[in-house]
Each structure stands twice: as C-alpha cells, then as structure tokens.
Image (cartoon, rainbow, N blue to C red; front, side, top):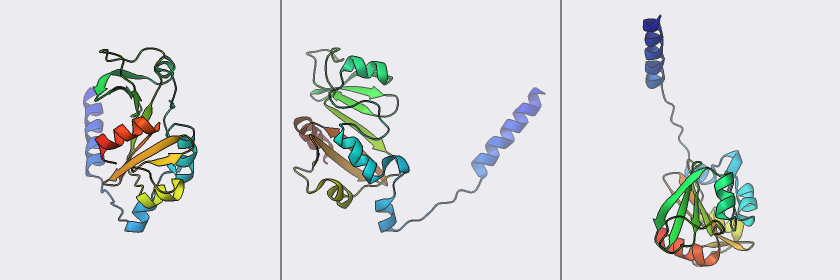
Length: 174
C-alpha cells in the first residue's frame, strides 16, 4: 500500500511537471491594460482614496496595535528612517522610527503601505488617467499619494502621506 501511494504521488508529480505549459503572448496594448478583477483601475482608485491598497487589510493611520491584531506578520526590520512591518499577505507597512527600537510603539500609525502585484502591469498613462499629472513622480488621491513602478509585467504600488512617499520615491526610484 505504501509503495502504491509513492508510485501514484511520483506519477502525479511527473505529470504535473511534464504537462505542456501554454504561454500566452500579448501585445503591448494588452499588457498595459491586463489586470485581475481584484485590482482593476477603478478599484485601485477606490482603495487608494481610502489610504489602503487592494488585497491588504491595513490602512494609513491605523495604529501598530490594531494592525498587528488584524494582519498577521512580523516587525523588526528597519529600512532607512523607517520601521517596516511585513505582513504575511505580502504587504509592507511603514512606520516612523521609534528611537533605537526595531518595532513601533503600540500607538504608532501606519505612514505608508507597499505591495507587489504579480502579473499586473500598470503604465504611467494608467496612473495619469486615474489621478492626473504626477507631482515628483507621485500621484495624488484624496489626501494620500500613490507611487508605482512596473517591471517584467509586475507592479509595485505604494500609498501614503506626501512626506513619507517622497522618501520612498527617492529610495525606490519611482
């Protein structure tokens, strides 16, 4: 019986590995407008106006204590002048420094959110259509600012207050 399970598992693995993979080719125009339902440009604008990003549970000005309860993850990473909380869903939450500590204090508020969206390519034109012309490569949405960079069909999006986003933009070359 154990040998049969091993053989079946082995065959299943080989089948999956050797199954033909179809690679879809898209034109430049298709690639620039390809988005999943969860992050279409309309919903992107909706989320960023509220100070959050699609498929994230935290938001700008949420306290560290609340974020930690709502979004599983870990802190302890410092990036430049910021403390970073890395959520298990892939989002990164940015806090102001807390002296020499590597974790924010309980009442510290989220200053910015960053997340990579795989296989979603946004262009400058997409962003300008949503938010208008950029200011220092940042796009204004209600009271927050959005930065983005696209590479190899993936997009990194960030949303936050202007001062924090300026610093992130300088580091990230938005």
